[in-house]
Image (cartoon, rainbow, N blue to C red; front, side, top):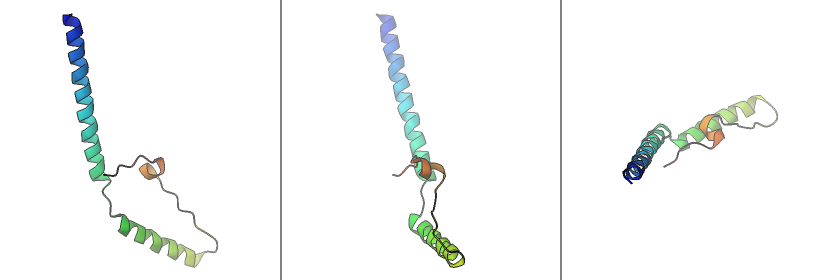
Length: 75
């Protein structure tokens, strides 16, 4: 019985630790991903307009990193 109790205590500690680590990582990523999206979109439009003025055809924007993988963190 004591062994079962210790095993359950260990499992509870591991779960609490995992939750704490996950929350810490999430908070770090939220801060790292804090962006001024309006300004970024304005810059992208400026760049796209400049490219359009120099070429014929269309431009397809492709995002990389966490945006393309849909793993970015929003709070």
